[in-house]
Image (cartoon, rainbow, N blue to C red; front, side, top):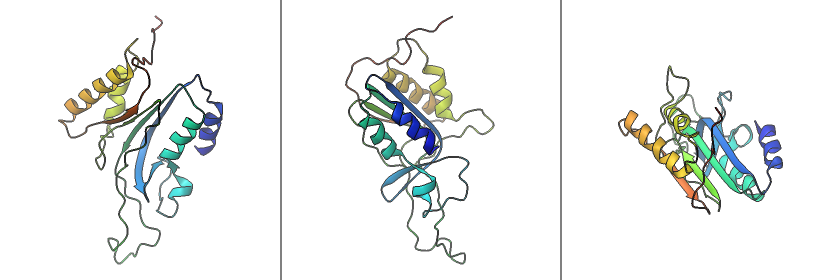
Length: 189
């Protein structure tokens, strides 16, 4: 995943709309948000920095390339238990540092960050479904022609909250410079 990210970062130009989407696990460790790919089982706190992706660092690297717009969509639980690398099998709940859900991220000018759920909350993975609840509603609304991204995410939030009986509430952090940003101009028939 790292090599793909580096290649993607290097391809970004100032006229680009960058859309980064991640579905998987996420956690906060030592004040950093880490995205944990699904095939990274057995990860512990000592291996987070090498086997997981620092989400803020990715967003910062995108910003350095000065794209027209960056959209960062994270469909991951904002809680994830990572076992301690020095955990005591006789006392697995000892005085180890606790991981928190993903923390808020700095939305650089011209960026939007959408989380599938609030900090410290869990996202519905859509067990038995193709996608989780956030992605299900995102796919329903993201390709509506000429619809502003803020409207799209408001509709996603409404759908997620309605279907989860308000147990899951998406969270958006943004610093957009332009009043109307559609992701889709027209659908070809």
